[in-house]
Figure 1 (cartoon, rainbow, N blue to C red):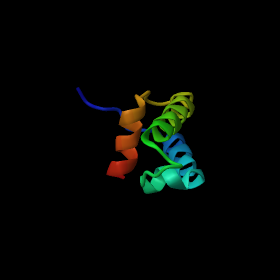
Figure 2: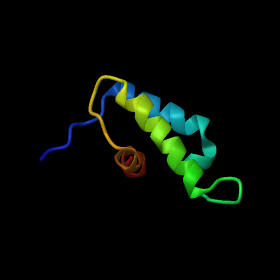
Figure 3: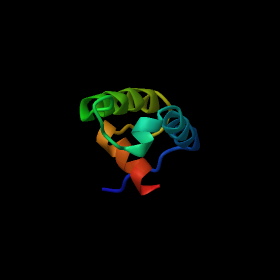
Length: 69
């Protein structure tokens, strides 16, 4: 099954989200930035990106998009 490419609007929103969340972008966990906090942010990102016309993905699939970019 082929994966549908994300739209330019989704890509722009994803990049902006990552720019606005430097802890998530860095991926370094600490007392103040835990895996639970990161997951909550990714779920927030998922909700936002899936509301933009284009493919819908789970939070971990959106994380893979940014990792693979």
